[in-house]
Image (cartoon, rainbow, N blue to C red; front, side):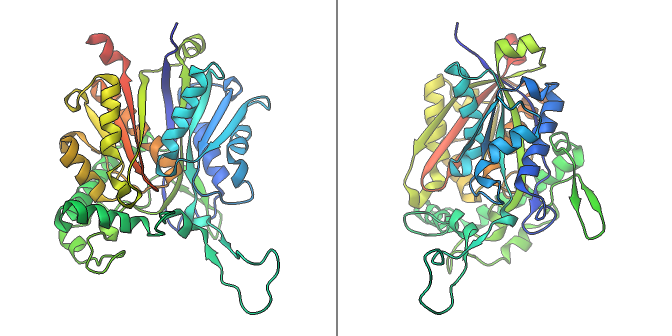
Length: 399
């Protein structure tokens, strides 16, 4: 009998602005917090989970290279459970979910935690030429966060690849800014309605005198206006179109989802409603990596026999607004069905966590609306695209 993969639980930390509330919280602590919250919401004992997959682009802290195993054991999983790190750049959180599912489809796992996180505020500086000794003179320190934001071939910053996409397809700065304002407004509405609060597990963060309870994302600026964004200068290219107002935020945070073989979920009495249907990965030219969602979604729809009209909701990562304009123009995705609760521009984009955050949001949306299908997609630095299809089982039973 073919194995079915279900998704349940789903929780994340608030996302902290770069250098602010989460800068003194180790990434392992963020991941553990999200993992425990996910288990609690799914009603699952940590001892029953056999695998944890953690997406992470930039290892930080001494635990960084072993982050998945640290999070697994700190969350209460048994010592004989397994854990692994995955890195598919901006799709790392989504890849973690897919990797956990692949372990189940191959018979190597039955119940897993999957997601990931980043704490870019803790990115180390390194001295590249010190190990074998310097002959003389000063040695510059290199920012490892800069490595994470550069194309490995051209060494352009990722924002410059967004400029390439805007130039190649003649997208207008005004339209990019309009998307940025929409993202901020939608995030503001989702905060006000309590939608985002449903997925956030509040966390205590250190302050000068004791701790403070952090309950909401730190990056959204729902009061921003189109007039304000129009005053921002391009940051990647003189005379360019990409600004801080139409780009994703540099943020810290972690997110986790429960991934289970359906038979195992039934045996444990897990309450679930969402099925992982399929996924697609593609390669695209690195210089316009932001085009990635278009062929990824097209391939996913081809694999599943669906059309854009069959999809009730889209989460397409707002790495840059031009990415979303390109997806909208090429795929004809309705704006009224896309990123209704904000995205990378307003909430922020810690690559290890983003895919899991988007998946949790899509799960919430399907459950709240009773709709059937959602697609989660993103571009990937160095030139890839990924798309994932999930299904509301209750809606499927009515079809």
